[in-house]
Amino acid sequence: MKAFLRAMWPCTLRGRLSLVALTTAALVMVVLTVMFNTVVRDHLQRQADDELRTRAEAVATTVDTSSDTVRVRETADDTLLDTNVWIYAGPRLLEHPASAQAGGSLSVTAARLAARGTRWCTTFEGKGPVRLCSRPVGKTPAGTAPGAVVVTALDLSPYRAWADTLLLASLALGTAVLACTYLLTRLAVGRALDPVRVMTGQATRWSAAASGERFGATARPVELAQLGASLDGLLDRIRAVLRHEQLLTGELSHELRTPLACITAELDWWHARPRSAEETRAMHARLAEAARRMRTICDTLLEEARDSSRTVSGITTVLPVLRHLAAEAPAAGTATVTVSCPETLMAGVPAGLLERIVSPLLDNALRYALSRVLVKAEQCPEGSVRVELVDDGPGVPESFTGQLFKPGRRADPGDGHGGAGLGLPLARRLARSAGGDVRHDARPAPGAVFVISLPAA
Image 1 (tube, one colour):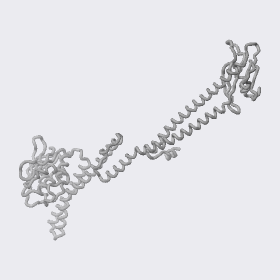
Image 2 (cartoon, one colour):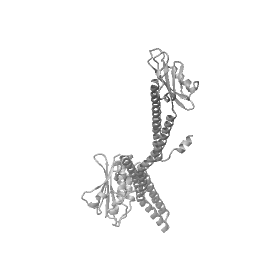
Image 3 (spheres, one colour):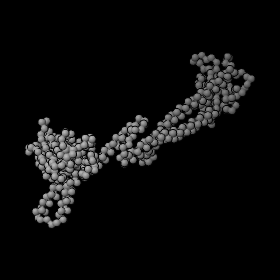
Image 4 (cartoon, one colour):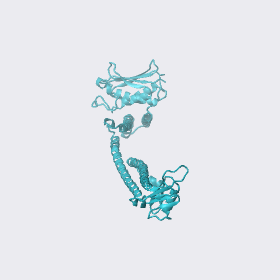
């Protein structure tokens, strides 16, 4: 039974709402139909009783109870007494309808009704329903039986037929109302849900294409506006995830490019000519170092991508990391790297993260420097660690300083220098994840100055 009900239960929202509306309307129609037909039958019975009482009053005028012997006076219209009328003087039957036998079931019912001696009505169910009403005749002292009782009868078949006709008509009307209710509900719900269907299709297309279009620009009812706002938030999150995924892919590609280039160059040189054992060991060391750098890059960026909201903790001696980066930095023209840092300076970040923050800035400085790059680290009075990278290149154009840290932006893409415009944004994002920051210092000086602030150990 449960399986049948589940199979019959509509799958669509429009079908379910239509079924709920139909069920509610059906309950209302059943209650109204029952009440209407109950009122109609009661009204028809009251009409029949009124008709019987009117007849009894007319017949009572023909009964004389002024003497000891009750008698029925002659009237000009004797058909009044022949139409379903019984007259009793005590238990004695004075008149009865010609169509009813004195000992018949209908006459017995009339005799019992007359024996009550009061105004009373009852229904006799024989071949057809018959309504009988009794009426005492004359003035009767309290506690005594009336001198005569008139009992009138009326066939209820026409009234019952009229009530049945009204019942069928009300059932037909209710069925038509239910059918119209169901159809109109389906139509209204379908029209009401059309915007939802359109919004669903738009959300699917916009999500797949990472479109910038949103639902909030269109005027809608309050409920649909709230739904649109929720979908806009969902689309924004999807777009942010896609953007973050693209940014992570670009950053990994950007950071892995240098160690991969080192590995490729070493292998090309190894195939170009025979190497001595000492040269081979040196090459293996350089390959191992490049592989270590790649692993550090992947671990650092993927760890930050998994939970970019947490604060990274760790302790690192700054000088060894800066010296290592200066030694491994690719040569760019005749530029040299000078490191100035106290030997005991400690930063509150892991060594791998410090390397990934400084490396893009150092690569960028070497790319544009003319002769030198200065890397200076020191302890600030407020307790943080400050790392400055200063080069003597052309510097950052003033018109471009507002876009320095936007991914994929370069001041002059055709200047002949490599780069995808991802290094500076990556360095700032990693520094901020550790509770620090990276900024451009626009002081009047030759070249560019970038400042890294990091928490102290």
